[in-house]
Length: 215
Image (cartoon, rainbow, N blue to C red):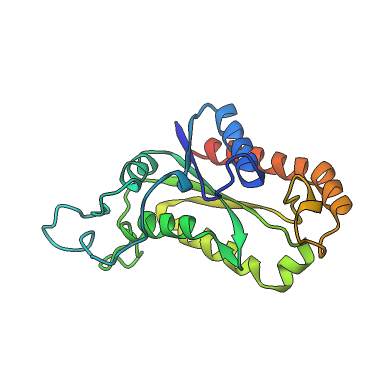
């Protein structure tokens, strides 16, 4: 069994990656071989709408024809049993790198012939971790849950279960005094980091273990 974590955050040692590490740890506890990919280390673009993955006799049916740093990552992802993704919420949505990864991963598997809308014949379980600075009540009021549910349903095109873990009100800086950030209470953020973030990490661990156990 194989599980790959795809980090869509530019910060390799911060909240999103910490949650992904825990999700991979959970996957490993269920017997999976694990690997992490940091999208910000790669040079790639989103889907360019070339339609080679849909074109007859192109030789790219069910594959992305674009050749860049994401090519090998997509090959690894499609050979895995579990894909674990992570992204902070930037300006109301996942990062551009994660969106581009999802475009490339999913569109090559979208069928324009099959009523089920997928041409993928395998089964991959997927999990997502989301991080953000805003508190949980604001997250709900601005409609972020719709984003999470939409992505969950999209990932089901890979024929496996999909889950997500949300970590809100995250601690954002090592030293708040160095930034223009008076809207945030550092003591409150530190308390959330100490009390809630470990709970979120445990949820990520359990998600990784659960998704691998469903294979």
